[in-house]
Image (cartoon, rainbow, N blue to C red; front, side):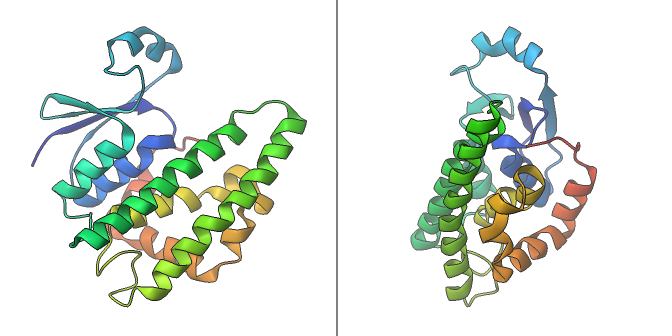
Length: 207
């Protein structure tokens, strides 16, 4: 099994789907969490001046979703057919957009602007909820988003919604909380033994 070392801040952020995918795959990876002060010193030495970066058997890779797709291919978490893989990619793209919007809210300190951004974000939550509900309803192969087994699509879905209420409040999370199919799916993902173990032991980092 390849040796993975993942470097990111001590938050969930863009790295959490990667961490969960590796944990689910049973890979005992190195979870390197750095401070923002440390980042300032090492930024110039990273490939594109951004995190996360991942060392795989000593070779460095970057861009969070590229790393996630590498893991998906390596550990059979990407679907079986071209159609399934494309659907997984659609879900990953939704995660990227979702994270960018959530980061704007989280990092905003002006109360009025934060309230405005929170409302906009709550409205944005509706679309991925509808998409994921549709995928779950139409997939008759085992109750996952794509195909007959868990994929990284389920993992990024989990990362999008599991802590949404705690981080942003009920109004932002309303579309998700009202969708009992999706709420049940998040619970199903968390019940997976390897994911449950990871969630219980991971640092209680916000965002």
